[in-house]
Image (cartoon, rainbow, N blue to C red; front, side):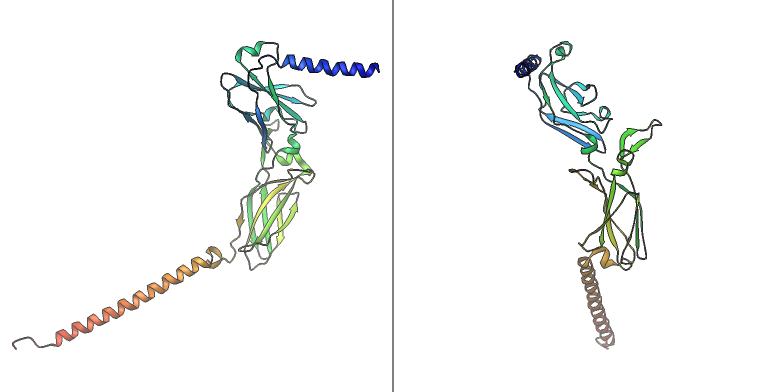
Length: 283
């Protein structure tokens, strides 16, 4: 019984302290529509509305790390928080404080809004892989690609790739199909290259996409550019039947025009020859 009463008082006291802390300037608007936007661990926090007569300050709170402040007294509605999320497996929340410049020195907590939780390792989007080289020789299609880089660096200053962070959790998919066809095939790898069997008489198009199979959500990354091989391509493969028809029509028109001009020139020559054979008047 005593334990229940003590627990009830603790809840009531916490609520009272929170309200007192938030009463620094209750008239200031608080942020709404707070979103995390993260690609390859570069993370931007965004919110609304645009401030007028006040500023925002962002506080990043980790489950097991100290609070860090970013974008202090900003008039913007976004903040790059990449550098304070280096522990990518940590779960963070953001407090967006609405403040005036004079309130920053007060002990009272200004009004604020709280974001949803964000864990970079689970939620950052995988960016587009860069295809470095591809060949189609005989019945083999080979594709070599490169991991996207992150904003984080090694001690020597070189940038870490997403593979350096995800390691064995990272896989890639190659989607490929016969040019001018809609039927796709796919295969996976944990390396930087694909080799697949194809029809040596056909050209193929393809793209590469990173995936994190262990994720429940947000598993698939952005797709690379689509590229196509050009082994034995003819004009019909390259441009399609429409262009071929246009070229044929133009060729027929040119041929017809040449025949018409030849007939006209021939008639003119015959008429001139006939006039030259006529006797002069008065002879």
